[in-house]
Image 1: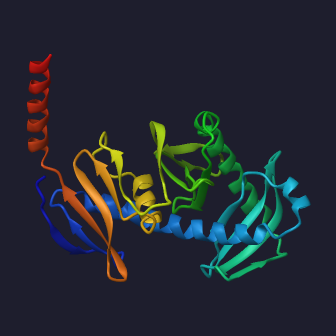
Image 2: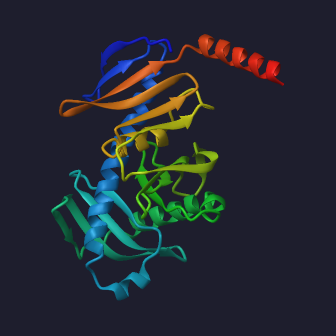
Length: 276
């Protein structure tokens, strides 16, 4: 494999060792989103821990349309309820400042704020229903309002109850407040793949049909970086991996020598034909 390296300091306060032809701009944009998804996921976990201590009878009032958001002071909130018949019924509201600072709030969040988020989440769930109904895999969802006023919704495989990390499908939608699907950047390999997290082994995510790492692949590698000794995102043109350098991580991107790979494939094909 041909290796070309270039040291670059990127705007995310993270060092990157980059292949010369690697699309760093695209990767950085996706990684910035992946970092936000990671924070969102932590908030969801911490608030869920508090949720599980509450009155179980109220759980019957909950639907799938729970979500997290940041207020004007960047404080995180988690809301649990149900969107039904055009209205969101708020059941639980938590203010989340850290793992050890999760408090229940009795404040009723603005109805229009809740309703539109419940609405677009329901639309997103419906869009990927053909996949979720055909598998026992659990999914997590993430939502935020973008600069255009629409909502970006991300639905990825969750960390499974049996300790398996899953990849191979990511469902990404931009939906307007009126319910129009403005953009669909979903990607599904046709099947999900997974690795058990009980041993810190080296793993490789197979995205060889694509030229660039996907958002879901980057998020997977960042989320599970401490569970495995190494995680490689293997695309058609490159290998990317988060590497621990002291107390921080750097991303390493290695460009593949496509001509050498193609030559090797032709050579192997000739050998197979001779054998046959």
